[in-house]
Amino acid sequence: MAKRLAIVLTAGYADWECGLLMATARHECGAETVILTPGGKDVTSLGGVSIKSAGAAEDADPAGFDVLVLCGGTIWQSDDVPDLSAPVGRFIAAGKPVAGICDATLALGRLGLLDTRAHTGNYASQLKDVVPAYRGAALYRDQPQAVRDSGVITASGAAPVTFAREILDAIGLGSPELFEYLGMYGEEHRKG
Image (cartoon, rainbow, N blue to C red; front, side, top):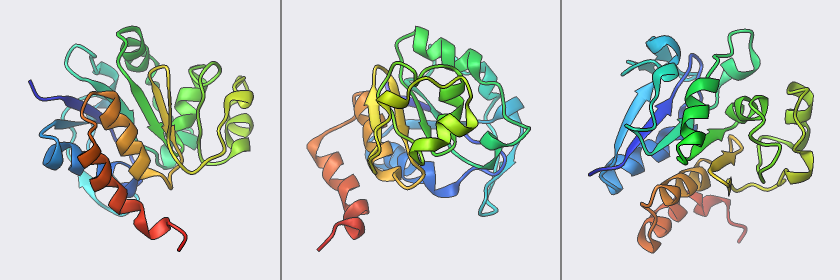
């Protein structure tokens, strides 16, 4: 049975943060990507790409998916932050990974998931500044690559390549060939 990824996109989502993950999962791994949105409403990205929702993010059920992925975007620091505590809690309870990139890491911080796990984000002080209850500063990894720990995957908005790698590896789709393929997308960042 093909792996299924629940990708949560919000109004103003960052186009580049989950694009490589979705394309690689479908094209290279034969997985299914399902776009879920808050309230099941269609959304438009920062770049103006309109997306039709396949369902409400709040209803995401780990019985039907292998991972829950929260894409970053403008909503995570706005007054319209969606409450995704129920689906995130269901995935964690089921032992299935939850991933957040860029400002979506703030949602994971608000739920206390980063207080006891190694993690990263856009910059070291962002979680402390935006999430008053955050207690995981000692576990923050100030690095450009995504971090995976105890079922939670985090990345800065500048790390879509390692974010994709960690997610695909976490759900059993990793391989040396896949990692080599994904690695080519980061080649421009290697210092010569």
